[in-house]
Length: 292
Image (tube, rainbow, N blue to C red; front, side):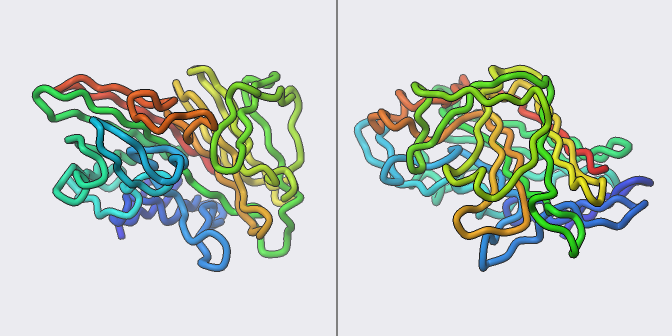
């Protein structure tokens, strides 16, 4: 387990999946990050790569061949290697190998940087295409879960959701696990809203952010503590909690990609939300988490 620490925060990271394991402020010692529970959602903050969401029938076609891949890709279940570390920063990396090439026929290098900056954790994903002649197709996203409520005596229904800019957004609906972006609904976020488990009866609340600066705030209104997730240049941000089985957490998910469209044809080159990275090029994706 990797530990980062500064005067305000202590963060723990698991090298398996480069997944966040703990977020604590020194002034209150509250555990902000969901600790995982096999009875509900066993994960904590998986990294989604090279796909975000589910593929139709867990498969896709590329170059005339069918490849099988489970929801959210394989990065979350693979070991990362530490390539640089200081007391307040770590960079972890994984890359393609014979096993990944069986399910994803591309060379890649994925670096994840965690850095403490005062009372915030800044997260940066860097994707590199090491190929000399082949374009890399991929999506990437984050899936951190936060304890809601933040005390043992509270209830989920004391969770408040607010966003910035505070306005109306297109909400992308899911039909089963697949997106129906052709039929969005307006969601009014001009004012904060209290959450309950039934808000997730159609899976995640997916905000179409249109690539701007988008901020999500979760507040335990009784404890008066919570988290602010600041996203930059995302295409979508999902807010999710488990349903119909329920658990006391809410995920805030910056996505640069999305699940297969309900009308998708299974061809990777046609898949909605995929990024294209030219040979020898890199791209960065970042967000921050501020517990308060």
